[in-house]
Image 1 (cartoon, helix red, strand yellow):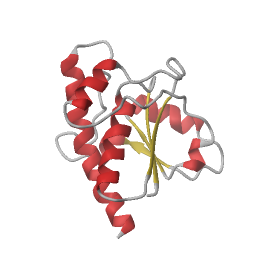
Image 2 (tube, helix red, strand yellow):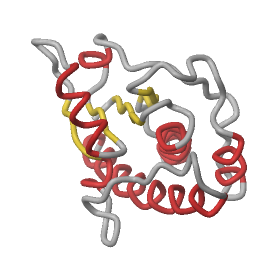
Image 3 (tube, rainbow, N blue to C red):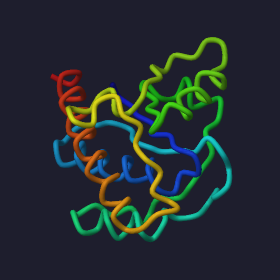
Image 4 (cartoon, rainbow, N blue to C red):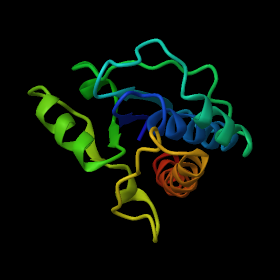
Length: 156
């Protein structure tokens, strides 16, 4: 695994949180992994992550502020080795979007996470309060640490 893309709806809450957390973990581990995030919809193209995501991440040492929302595009399916959907709806959209000849492995983010998060959709915190962003961060940290172990296995 040399490149990972995280995908949610608008690319301002869940996927940039995963992007920022995983990018810091691989950098701290000294691994060379391309990390990015995108949305299935273009609602927020060019916007920074939701301020609540930025605040929650900052409390644990992650800086999401440089990130900007973008939309998932066909080229992503060959540019990235692993594309992780934050929920099953995103995974369905990704599977329909994937062009013939796609090389990326598509899966649910939480399928790589340990219990109790394994196999669960990462909930969308957008319409709720600050506690939803903390829950997303908890799930993302657990899943990102499991992904880091996978990345270390690839790099030896």
